[in-house]
Length: 150
Ligand code: 5GP
Ligand code: ZN
Image (cartoon, rainbow, N blue to C red; front, side):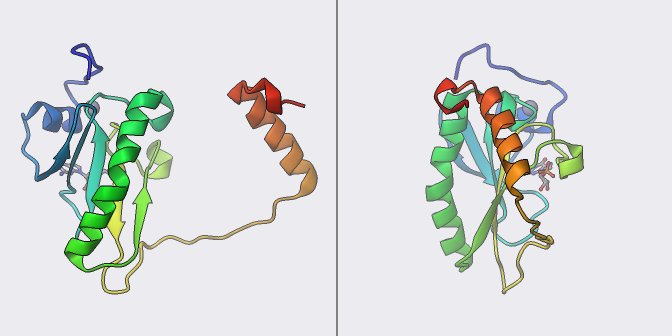
């Protein structure tokens, strides 16, 4: 991690990265830190964060995002084994309306404990042809991948 990485001195996770607030550390590398969540939704609820301060995922440089993603498989395996789970969710909230409370990007690993899955309602709609084409075009244009643009 570069010495001049973004930090927010008021951010609780930046304070954890700096060692100013303790955590139950599970993993650390140049770009990431993983630790037990202080308010676990289920036993084995852990967080993976970039050491640098970014508020939402869209701000995270690809190299840092890749470092976070690289931790998830191995840590998921260790966590679910440790708590005797076989299923889990990886959750990543962006923005207050999406239930983000700590404004420093983080990935939750939440095992399903005792058959009690994360409590959210998945209510699928239907992807209509015209809407899908318009939406696809709008997203592809923003990605700047000219090969896929119509
Ligand atoms: P969010 O709702 O922002 O996606 O989740 C933030 C998570 O951070 C919550 O699950 C909360 O329990 C956890 N958290 C907040 N403050 C601390 C802290 O000081 N230490 C640890 N280990 N976890 C924290
Ligand atoms: Zn921060």
